[in-house]
Length: 289
Image (cartoon, rainbow, N blue to C red):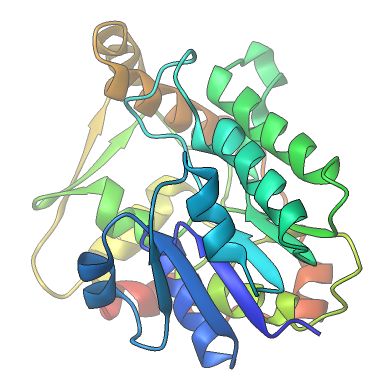
């Protein structure tokens, strides 16, 4: 039985709701953070904080010592280049090494559904290679694992699409995505840790409704209460052009192209049966922002 969980990436956009859900589910949680003072203002007081760096093996081992499991929430920053040090692979190798030394019983990691677009329609992006490598590292670690493949998160509308009073789209969304809230995802992660720690599991993580990005932005605009929003659209070709000169725009062009074209299908029947059905709709999420 898993009682204590170490969290890597607890202060991130998706790390926070998961960390809170673990606390609410009764787990003891320890988090590796760069700045304890700042993290303690953002997360529940019950969390045990370890101040350190993911590049330092001793800090990771200190965080893991006495814990049963590890939840890993890592991502590539939009300013990263292929030759940089990547948390999702280089950092993950240090995590796995520390997990072996400290007898961790379970590794759980967030990946993504959209990275499966790699190779479709001639699409290739080095960042998706990194995600595939991280999955391979987890599966070959020798430690029981759970891998989550979420669809798009509702939080992206507020933190990524929303720029001031505008909701900024690029290109044309061709397929529905099953947007899920961070809170519902956190609930599912907590329930996954309550299962048999020896089993290896992979879960598609999707919300209760499917929308194209255009449909979802229109709905968010309608029910967002704080201010009137205007939807604007940028040509994806223009974004790609400027992406040749700015790494952040290059990142944005690739992820948006993949999100627009990935033919996502609903595939979370097993996830809902084992971890619970998400309950927060996009309408409710927008209304409560």
